[in-house]
Length: 177
Image 1 (cartoon, helix red, strand yellow):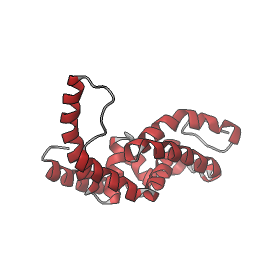
Image 2 (cartoon, helix red, strand yellow):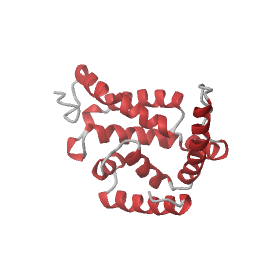
Image 3 (cartoon, rainbow, N blue to C red):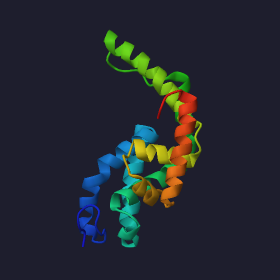
């Protein structure tokens, strides 16, 4: 029986509860990691995979949310080169132009562009494991336990990857992260 969004995920007719509770959050996470058009496709694929594998879901390994983030992160791995290319392109060119032509928005975009460029370059310089941990914490707002469950690694691995990533980001960006 499908309980609240973090309960068992077995009954197919009740899987819509899981979808409704988590789709937008997963899509946003994927959209921050990859292009938005790819994010839509991967979010749908995440839930298709989850639906197909629902009988193998083990709540003892973590909640549904962490399970979905794990599936989504694995899909990102398939698109890793595109992600790194995107960060490198943003580092070179800055964020895409804004449709609003107002002078103040232009000034804000230029200032944001410098930050996006530097952050994108710094993220591209992290190892895949470090980048996954940073982005699951930053974009997904997952706890260390949830990140560990999502990636199938130990809590200590999450803590050490995040510590290494913060040190690298601090050194690259020159700011406290």
